[in-house]
Amino acid sequence: MRMTALLGCGVIVLVGCGSMPVTGDVKAVDASQPGDSQVQVYAVAPRDGAPPSEIVDGFLESMTSDDPAFATTRKYLSTDARRTWQPGGSTTVLAQAPNRSGPLLHDEDNRATRDRETTYTLTGEKVATVDAQSSYRPLAPTAYAQTLHLVLEQVAEGKKEWRIDVVPDGLVLGQSDFKRLYRSVNKYYYATGSTNGRSTLVADPVYVRNRTDPVTRMDTATQTVRTLLAGPTNWLRPVVDSRFPTGTALRKGVTALAPDDQNVLKVPLNQKADSAGRSACRMMAAQVLFTLRDLTSAVERVELEGGKGGLCALDADDAPEYSADRGSEGADSQYLINDKGQVERILGATDGTGTPEPVTGPLGAGTVPMGSVGVARDEERAAAVSSSGQHLYVSSVETEGELAEPLVTSKAKKAADRLSPPSWDGRGDLWVADRDPAGPRLLRLAGGTGEPQEVRVPGLDGARIEELRMSADGVRIALLLTKDGRTTLNIGRVERRGSSVAPEISVEDLRQAAPQLTDVSAISWSGRSRLVVVGKEEGGVQQVRYVQADGSTSGSGALPGVNQVQSVAAADDEQLPLMAETVDDGIVKLSPGDNWQTVLKKGKALVYPG
Image (cartoon, rainbow, N blue to C red):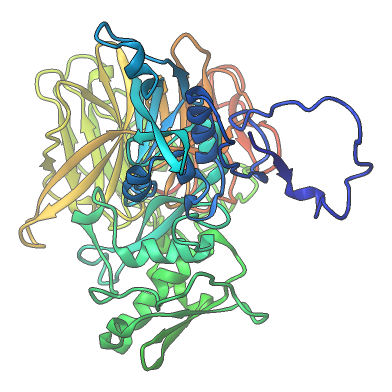
C-alpha cells in the first residue's frame, strides 16, 4: 500500500546505498514499527475495485504519510466527506496503530443493504491527544473505539467504488508514527507580572510536524513561529501573555524560515505588528529567538519585519535578560546534607566532582541537624528542614550568624507526615508542604521570609502532597501526590490574583504528567520545560526518565539504569550532570553521553539551586 524511503540513503532513485537489490520477494512494511524518524511514508491512492477492507486500511496507512494537503488520503473518502474532513483539527495517539474490524453486521441488514454500504470499527488503547492548539495531553490508557461508514459511490459513468462517507475529524496515529511525524518544541511567553522588576519568559510546549506540515505546507520553523503568534495554549494562558499585538501573523505566503549565512533569521509579519513600540518589539524578538533556539542553535540574531519594513532586531547575546533561569547563571554548585546534618557545598563542580565543604553560616555549623535543603537560585540563602522534619529554617550561606527561629513548624506526630523538602522559585519565593494528616498545607513564604501563606490547591481530590519542585519561572509547580497507596506526578499552574503586596495564590488545573508511571518516588526540573522522574510502571522496575512539562516523553527517553534511587537533582543548565542519591552507591552523577559514576559514598538530599 505504500513504500518507505530512508532519507539517509541519499536520492535512492539515482544513487543506491551500497548495492540495490534487484531480486527477492516484496514485503509489506508496518509504518507503526519503531524506527528511524527519517523514514518517510508515501500515500498511495486506492486501486480500482478495492474492497471495503482495503479502503479502510489504505486510509489509515495514508494518514501516517506526509501527503501534501492530504490530497491522496482524501481519495479514500466520499465526495461529501472529502470536502468536510478536517485532518488538522486534532490528533488521537494510540499505544499501537489502530486495529480494524468489520464489517459490522446487524439484524436489520439485508443483502441489498450490505451490497451498497457497510461499517468498520477502529479500536485501540488511547494514550494521548493533541488538540487544535498543538497542545499534548497524556492520558491513562483508555479504550478507543470509532466507526467508519462506507458506501458504494459512483465515481464515473457506469463505475462505482467503495468510499468512506462518515469519518471523525483529525488523525488517529499509533505512538511510533506520532513520534516519527511530530516533534516537541517550546514556544515562549512572558509570565504575568514581573520577577524582580524584569519580564520572564515561560516555555509553552507544543507539537509541530517534522519536515513539512501537509495542511499548511510550512516547514518546522515556520510552523513553530505560527503557533507562537497564535498565542499560548489554553492551560498556560491564565498566567502568561504575549507582546505581539493582537492579530499579528506571518505575512501571507510565508512557508519557510531559515537563517542566512550570517545566522540571521528574518521574520516577515503582517501590518498588525507595526503598532508595537520599540521596547515591546524587542520583547517580541526575544520570544521568537528563544523559541527558535530551542529548535536550532543556528539562529544568532532575529530581525522582525512588519508591513512597512524592518521593525527591530535582537542578538542572542542580549537575550539572557529575559530568561527565567538568569538568576542561576553560573550556579554550578551542588548542595547536600552530610552525616552530621550539616549543609555542605561542592563548589563550582561542573563535572559533579569536588570536595564538599560546609556552607558559611549556621546551616554549615550544624547547630541543628538538617534532613533536607533548598538553595535560592542566587545562592545567597538556603532553606533547610530539620532532620526530624518538624522545623523549616532560612539562613544566609554567605555570612556568619546565629540560626534564626524556624519560619514553619509542623505539628504532625510522625516524621514522614511533617515538612517536605523546600523549593525556591525564580521570583525568590520559598515553597514547602506540611504533610500533617490533621491539616495538610502547601505554604509559600514571599521572598523566603515572614509569615507563611497557605496556597489553595483545589484539584487535590483527597490526595496528599508528598514533595514539590518549583519551576524557575515561578508559574508551574511539580507535585508528587499520594492517594490510595500510589504516588503520581502532577503539574499545576500557579495563579496570582489581587494586589502584588498581598496576592491570593492558588495552584490550578492539576494535570498528571506521567500517567504510565503508577508510583513516582523522586522528581527534579531539568531546564525550562523538562523534568527528571524516578518511578515504576505497573508491575515494572524502577526507572529514571525525562518527561516534558506537558507530560509527553522526552526525545531523550529513558536514562541508563541505576539501582535504588532515593532522590534526584538536575540543574537549570542541562549541560550540568544529573545527580542522584542511591541506597548502595551513595551519590552518583550522570554526565551527558556518559554512564553513572559514584561521586560520594556519604551524603544525602543533594540539590542544585532551586
